[in-house]
Figure (cartoon, rainbow, N blue to C red):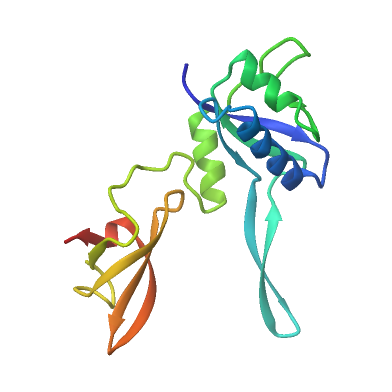
Length: 177
């Protein structure tokens, strides 16, 4: 069986609580091999108040949570019986399994959130020394301090004039030494 994305309906305002509850249940019930990621669809919004810009997160679909999982009787049971979950979107009753999202729907939705639904594998490692290929810091070397697999970004610390400068770079902007 293949993993797919499903939409879970929750009580409105409980999306983050459902995410936390489901992630905890996945750990306690040892379902890591069937339930992989739980995402509350949010996008960043910039608003200006009193001349100051403020970035806030807004729920794209209030009352819904996305779950990446392999649909089995066990995984279906775990998600359905998580506190705050009212059911799956796309199931036509208590006994029928839900319909998965199409890959293009998932890609579009995650793009709107500034994320990648299908993260690529990388060979980069924390504390690895890399060379910057592009931009103002081209040809500088730095140390990887963090890897964001979903956004395909690295946090790299570069030494410039005896001071450490923190950069956030795309995977494609650095190369291994």
